[in-house]
Image 1 (cartoon, rainbow, N blue to C red):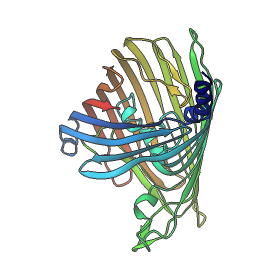
Image 2: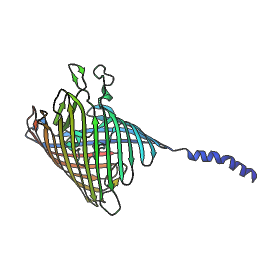
Image 3: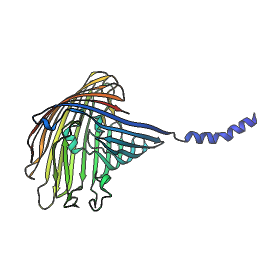
Image 4: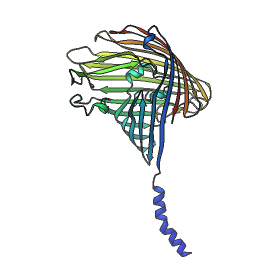
Length: 381
């Protein structure tokens, strides 16, 4: 008996130490998007009907104690490239630091493009919300508050950094998102927030020289089968950029509203007037069948509806890249859409969408009108 007790005591420290070791986990991740579309437009030659696979991704997620990471390889339109690549350290349940290439927090649409309940993200969001950016982001959240702050370099840094002398410097940006919310059982969900941003000029090549003094803003029509530019412009002789966007979310049981307003000012050199632009969108969501809406505190967004849920989404968007005083006419856009989303399970979603889009007031381009009918089957894990 004494021998057994002694052996147990000897084994106890190693057992305790073994129990303290975190578990190493690796899980595959990926997505497949398959789209089909029919178009009606006076400019039909620019919008051929058909099908497309906008994106296929395959990757892996890793976690070990307070550390986690992600890497994705994407195949889209016959091109292969790296997407989400980051390493994250969680100080505790409510504070984390992420470093790598990912979507930084700036407003409601700071998620992957394939997760937009409006089928494609609103044009206004496409103009002002950053995509994948190389940088670092700190996030804090609590039951009442959400806060994110990040710094990143321009997107061209991932592809042009080794192309000297055509990339002799890097623009950088700063972003922040602050949200105050009320989330309690059996009562309406609401949150109000504001995001702000600052950036220095980005890559612009002139006479085969990188002069790094411009900002390019552009957005396509809200479809992936035919990729056609809707509005866009390049602002040269730029010094810096300031922008902000207030946001609002209200949800109760099966109804929800989401909206954002965007303002941006690009200051310019040589006595040129600053370029100011503003846009916005409003989205009304309703669950035809299934459960009620819920909220994700860690990302400050409404959660994806539950399995076997049918959702109807109405969206209106107005965007403008026109500033008479600055002499820049990048175009105006009106888009109205209705989308039906059916969530088969947590991994498979089907979307059916109709949109009407009209663009005008773009220098060197005629007004364009497009009616689109499109469907998407998405696998996401």
